[in-house]
Image (cartoon, rainbow, N blue to C red):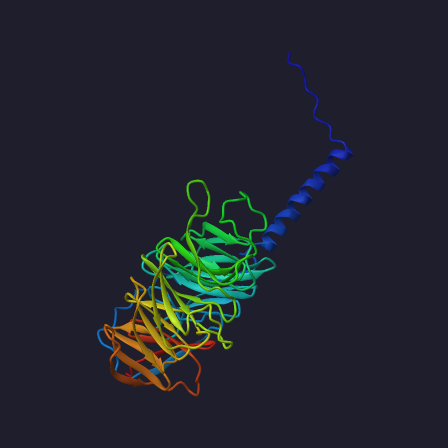
Length: 421
């Protein structure tokens, strides 16, 4: 005959402890859910990725406005393989380039720092960067075709950041720190202010640096900065990812100026063999420790000086550089400089423009007051002008092309221009 085991008796204390644990688990789950990005976001996806439009066979003879959309949180039109991306009031959306109809939409209850369409020929992602108490730290990667979430990350950041990418890494750069991310949003490096370094001593030995501009190029990222002990502005070239010892690789650094009087030089191009800097030159006091006037300065990927060319320009050029079909364009404040995307050297300058342009059917389109100048890509010779009615807008314009649609960023608005039917 087996021994009968008495049932376990639960005391009042046991029941109270169990109840407390259950309540704690429920509260913790609610808090995680309430604080998650999914709880504070709204996502409307596309049923399927659209086909990429075919490249235009010729530049149009005329253009009329087909649609417009608010996009205060971009400065240059952002294009995926098939859509135009707009970012405004916490919302990132993909639009049909021909009609402006919405294809997908992502919204968060946080201020939007910016949006970047990256790797359109590969993973085809859109990065939405949002601001919380840690700065522009909340990043969501969305599929460019459908809008589906691909990856998310959160880390320390400045309150405003500039977003850029090359074929391998995206860069988020503020005034005190920068980060690089791969397509899976895994961080390559962090540089500048690091509040809680996991491995002290992994970065170059400089402190309290102010970052002025940064651009990636061929698995490297160039930074213009000024750190403790620097009399002037410095160019530094870093590896986009840590080395095998989890250290930030510095490929080279050099002083650009011997003084910080006047505005900082600005990175305008990054490539496989060079980084190019726009230097506004001598300030109003006649400072002699800078180049005598506006110039384009080319450096190797080890931050070694290669060439300097005088250029017409203003003290501080507006807008971001634009890359298309092997050339880089930036607006100098008085015209557009067109650079060779490989060497970083100036091919030609076009005065009197109002921003950066794009290549369409082998010809260069540049925005001008009241129109678009069509030019030969080889030497900048003007072929003709396409009149464009901008409805009274007279500011800077950043122009890009998707299929046979010409897309313009005019201040806080993106506009689609198409040939008349």
